[in-house]
Image (cartoon, rainbow, N blue to C red; front, side, top):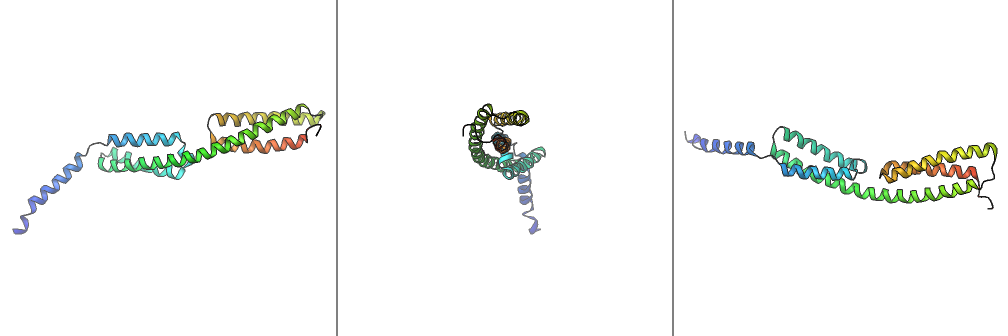
Length: 186
């Protein structure tokens, strides 16, 4: 009988712990903070510029949502704190990488526009005629469409697409410049 004397106290303690676990309140503030971090990371295009960090944060977010659905609020609160910090990390990394790409694309845009304008000027002064002029004019028109697309992507802050388009435009510019040859009078 002596060994059963502590049983009511242990049972009471166990019931108290279980009742506290079931009484944990919904972590609405942690959810709000995690959602804000998620939105900020999206704004910085973290999925594109920091994909592994974004994926890690997204997995923690999904786990937190599952815990919330099962009303495991203590677990959800911990997961929300984790995903918040991971989204913040993804945002920070993404911002730095985007800034680097933005600078690179800006320099590329300056070079593209300058070379395109010089090419346009040289084409208007060209002494080519017939078939050669017709082919060069068509190449120039196609290039003009590509330059406009590139500039639109830069303007819309679609940096990954703009970087790729800019590289393609620079290649096409070089091809058309080669076809045109040196400026007249040079």
